[in-house]
Structure formats: structure tokens, C-alpha cells
Length: 121
Image (cartoon, rainbow, N blue to C red; front, side, top):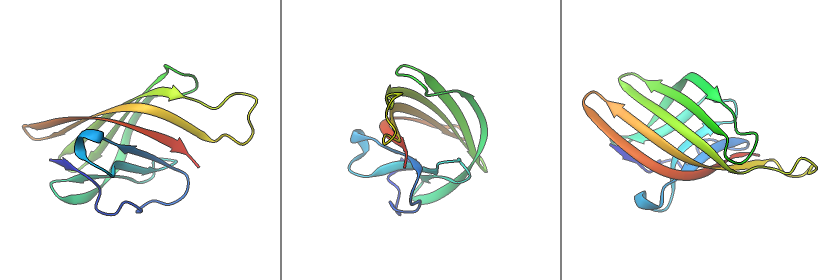
């Protein structure tokens, strides 16, 4: 059900991105920094998702952020865990790294994708 994004550069600039070694070279998730647009490839097509809910934050290593996205009958529950954050005294650091689990469901189909990625500029 979940594949690599066809348009790997669909969102430019500050963004959320994630890739999964198990799925090959490329991004499985891409979103605007403000989550106004989020993309995953579902059944061979890059699909735009809307943010439904957000809980948590990624302010320090180990923090967990949970987001839910929806597009029609497809639901994506993303659970991010911060693996690296910018030091408090760094003005040039703008990126947070994370491990993320995407739990994707469509009707009776369900797929879990483990990935790593980053958010920032």
C-alpha cells in the first residue's frame, strides 16, 4: 500500500521528511513545516493528507510527538521520537532528527512503516 513518493521534491524549503531503509532509497513522507500539506504514496499515487490531530512535542531527545493525518478513507497515525535536537546555545542549528512509525490504514488494509527523518530548514 505505502510506496516511495514519486515526486521527491514536491515540497521545498522548511519541511518534515522521512525515509525507510526497508522501502529503498527515497522519501516515504514529506510535509510542509506547518503541516498545511502532507504527502505519502498510497497504492502508487502521491496522496495529499490533511492534519487531523497533534499531541506532544519534540523539544528534547526522547520526546514523542503523535500526529494523525487523513485523506478520504486512508488514515495515517505518525509517532515521532526525537533522536537529536539543536543545542540551546546554537543559533545556526534548525533541524530536529527523529525515528518515526507510520501506521497506515485503508479499510481492512493496514501497514506499519518504520522510518527516520528530520524536520527543519
